[in-house]
Image 1: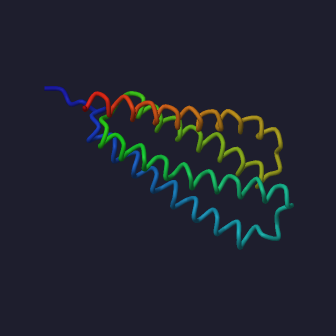
Image 2: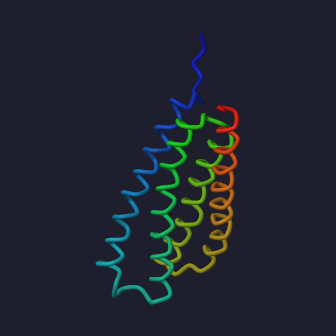
Image 3: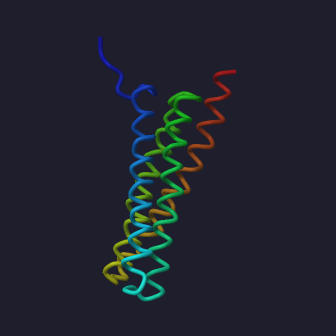
Length: 138
């Protein structure tokens, strides 16, 4: 008998756990920015840093929503894809803004819109996956 590693009961906890870890890091990054970076960064770089923190915290909750949705509506490929897109967005969008803010390397900002698109795709996949998942359960 083979084990199905994409079974919602196996994948859902990972998205919830990754969301919790992203939230933990986001809270820490926010505190670090408020205390250690407050006077060290130029205002435009501080705005970039705070935008990264804000989006990280929002999408950490998005990952938790993905995990819960997998349990409630079934583990459709779209719901899984939404989680992967949110993870990609966290790395590309938030990561590029953190690097930009902390190093001043403006070229890294070219990656940021790709991460933003990943976030958009993630939320759209989640919405469609939930609608389709709830239709198949009715």
